[in-house]
Image 1 (cartoon, rainbow, N blue to C red):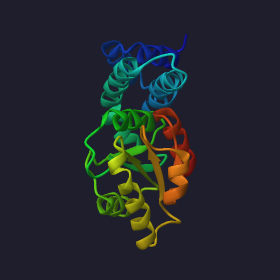
Image 2: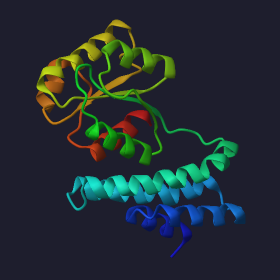
Image 3: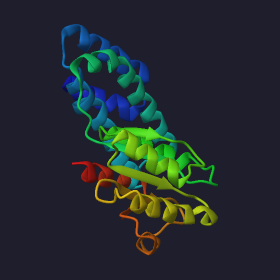
Image 4: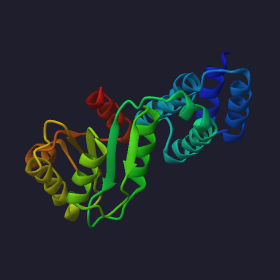
Length: 210
C-alpha cells in the first residue's frame, strides 16, 4: 500500500496520531505536501463522505474522521503555505438568522473542506446581509445557507433577494439545505441549488466553483 493509501485509511479510521506521525516522516523525506493532502487526507475524507451519504457510517464516524483529517492538515500547514496551494473555490457557510442549530452546518463544512474548498464559516444566526456582504468581500462563488426550523426558512429568500439587489447573481450562487428545506422551496424562493445532505452539498459546491 502506498503512503497515500495509508493516510486515506487512517483518516477513515479516525487515527489522528498515526496520521500526524506519517506526515511528519514524509515531510522529512521531502514528499510533496499538496500530494499528501489531495491524494491521502482528502481521498480518505471523501470516501467517508460517500459512506455517510449511503448510510454506511453515521455522524460520530464522520466527526472522528474529520478530526484525523484536521490533525493532518495542521501538520501540513507550514509546508502547504510554502508551496502556495491554490484553493479550488470559496464558500460562505452559515445557519440563517433566528436559527441556532449547527450540527448539519458543521458536517457540510467538513465535506466542503474535504473537496479542497475554502470555507468561511459565519456560524449560526446569520443575517442575509452578512452572508452576501461576506461573500462579496471574500470573492466567494457560493453562499450555503442552512435552516432547521420552518420559522427561519424565510431568511433564505432574504439571502436570494440580497444577492439580486447587490447585482451579484451571476457571480455568487445560493445553496440551501436543512431538514425542512425541499427542492420545491428552493424553486419558490429562487435559490440556485438544494441538496439533501452534506456530501451532496460538497459535490455541488465543487461543481459550481470549477
